[in-house]
Length: 299
Image 1 (tube, rainbow, N blue to C red):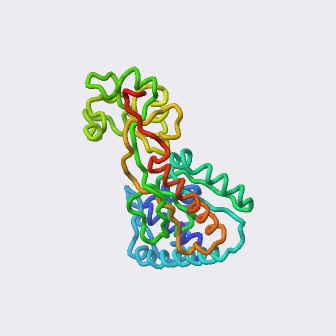
Image 2: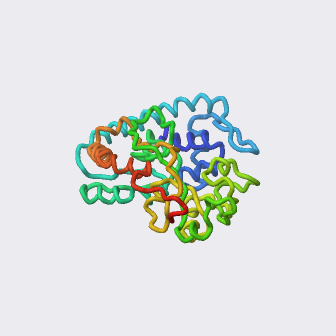
Image 3: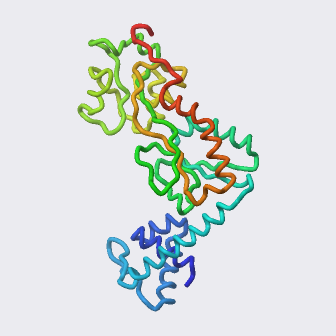
């Protein structure tokens, strides 16, 4: 049995369509179709029923699936084990991290790490999805979550605190703390008549101006003096255009995650130790210890 055919079989079984499987594997739709036909011909059985809404495993396909999954897991486990025995400070560390966390907090640490370890290259994949570290889609995941996966080695880096921010000029002109204020919130999420978060905010009497589903856009809108916004402190406290208008409140934990099979690799140890060595600074920035809350009347 051709291992490449087995990988394609797994992709189609999980995606239920040739096109989705082809996109995942980064190959053409026709190649996926040909390889499935070849696998079925070599095995002498039909593995999929071609249905109007996608591909469905036949009985033979269902019997092959656990065998293919076990083989796939065994090969990945072997690869991780071999990779983990690397004792040389060379190679690549692939880090998956949300772009907002990378840009506003971790990029300086990544650059300093590569200066100290010139044989190691950091590859950053900006994503909020939990990459499958067991399949080596990434070596390390930095994630904002209060429920990290149990099968990964985790190091708690701190809790993300959020606060309200605005420009000095905007706060002076619109005084968001006053009952008759003309200040407006920079909205986020889907437009609603009255969002739930508004009543829980420090300034529940204010209306919303616009809706922006990306926090980097929200920050930019706030910096341009269009309203006040609520952001993580590691963004707001380090934006010189903004002042903090409320005490920080906790939200999501931040974790440094990796697979236990890779913990022996020298480059992985070096990277984890470097980040953990800067843990106090990272925690302080996450929790808003590096900033100061001001009173609107004093701005």
